[in-house]
Image (cartoon, rainbow, N blue to C red; front, side, top):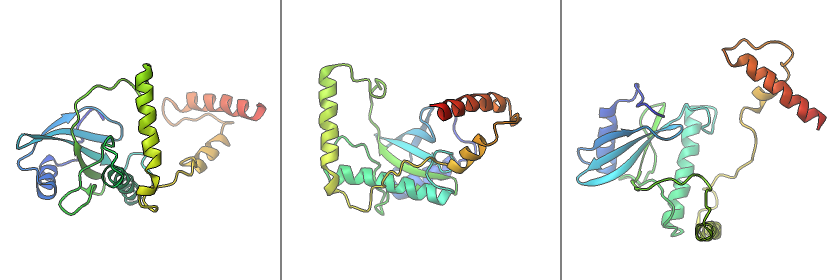
Length: 204
């Protein structure tokens, strides 16, 4: 998400942050980072926060519509907050609850807002733990995370079914490899690659 969304009212966002999270006269600086969410650095009364606006219409969000996507995100972030607050896992960076105890708020039909602590640092890459000490520390963190299962409400975390999203559309496409795909410049290259993958799968 390299550019600020044009259909998002920044004034409305500021009003929501001030009304529900108590961030008085917030100053927002857009950060061109993230995937599926828009982010701002927020300064309010010499405190800094990390503001995220989730795009509920993004294809990878769970659910067939924006309401289902919101419900799935809300459940995920409430799980993170429970791991931090109830299970005492201080390394979990979860959203802050607003004045009504909610961690995710609807800004519009398309967008939802959450406020998290702003943590300065650098990313070393996902899973790039080359030093033995880093691997030991990460192992300890994962051990504490799994050991905290019983300290989170049983119905809160979503169980992963490992079902393929939009599987019906994928199967339909795989049954339509015999004719050219004219849907844009990548249609035909995608069809050819899919045909190769399908052949490898059937002959394996």
